[in-house]
Amino acid sequence: MTYFEAFGMEPKLALDAEELQRRFYQLSRELHPDRFTRRPVEEQQQALEKTSVLNDGLRTLKDPVRRAEYVLKQHGFDIGEQRTKDVPPELLEEVFELNMALEESDREQLDGFRAKFAAMLGEIDGGLQSLFAAYDASQSRDDLQQIRGVLNRRRYIENLVQKIDSSSL
Amino acid sequence: MAYSDKVLDHYNNPRNVGSLDKSNPNVGTGMVGAPECGDVMKLQIQVNPETGIIDDAKFKTFGCGSAIASSSLATEWLRGKSVDEALAIKNTEIVAELALPPVKIHCSVLAEDAIKAAIADYKAKEEKRTPAGAVTA
Image (cartoon, rainbow over all chains, first blue to last red; front, side, top):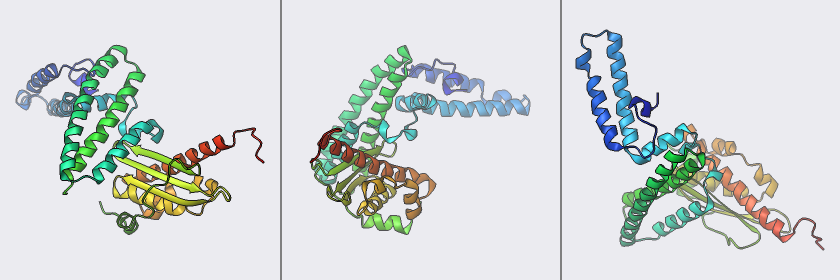
């Protein structure tokens, strides 16, 4: 069973987060252990397992990036299973140059980069919204491929932010 | 996770860090990366046009210790090899030499891919210089 199925929702990338949360509370109430005290041990066990799936599912689906990674993985676009040729040279060039620039930056410049990266992440997330809607309508692998590329870039930039935050310059 | 002594050695004293002139016709550049861990690896070879032997190799890697060690080791191995010998370098040899644990095998794959990308870039330049069918005096 997919997480979407566990919540009885359509497997959409542009998922209604409020609806997801509402269903989570509803289903969690229905599966609460208090309701199963007089039921057979087997049913108690099943309710616990379903609750555990819902918890994992909520964590995965409520965050747009995790949700997209989950859907991509289901369709064979796992971030960890990409080959080198799947990552375009322009992206590698960009990330390489940004890494070089960080290496030569002082604290003040690093702060400037952090602000720049935050803005880039904001732009990326805005762009993802329309890509999500496009995929929901088309269900095409080309659209998934494009989302894969955007999420790769996003991951690289997040990684650069982490580097800045962990640097003790 | 503990790194092997050899990984630590390459990490602390990386060999051949730097870059070669990308526009030099005898230089091949390979740039590869793994978005999942944020790694980017640039590896360059310089081939002596007379002998066909790789006489210089440089790298610059942003990534974990194993990725740095894998590319550092790769440049050591590349120097003095012919292009064809270089193509035969396998990631499993890097794994064995550096005693990389299973979770770090992808770092050696990255290094092998970087070698192959650099050679492909060099060969593409070479073909441009002497197009198929061209008479070379």
